[in-house]
Length: 116
Image 1 (cartoon, helix red, strand yellow):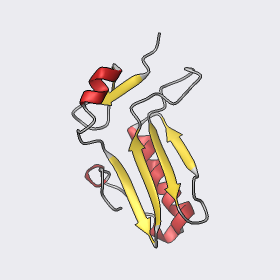
Image 2 (cartoon, rainbow, N blue to C red; image 1 turned 90 degrees about the horizontal axis):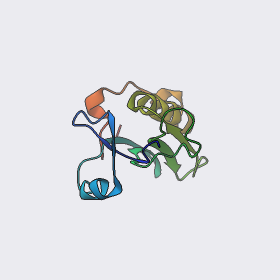
Image 3 (cartoon, rainbow, N blue to C red; image 1 turned 120 degrees about the horizontal axis):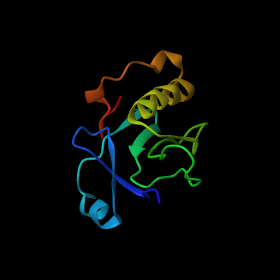
């Protein structure tokens, strides 16, 4: 049976299967993600820790980008890799804030609490 719970390796990018007790022990640890905010509208991308694929076909879905506020409030996309989450965050920024707001994210910039 495929694992349901994951944690991130020390590189902050690679998911590693775990159990819920180990995951809860890591709850206070740093979880990479990205936040972009303009005029009270926030685009947030986070590592979920729980596989959200629901069908278990294909790779586990472990990252999510969600919009809070504004015209696209509640819109979300989910991803199976750190790289896809980075790209998806930028695509959502372009959609929500306009193409002029889009810029490259260096790996070090894509981090919890960062404003991109």
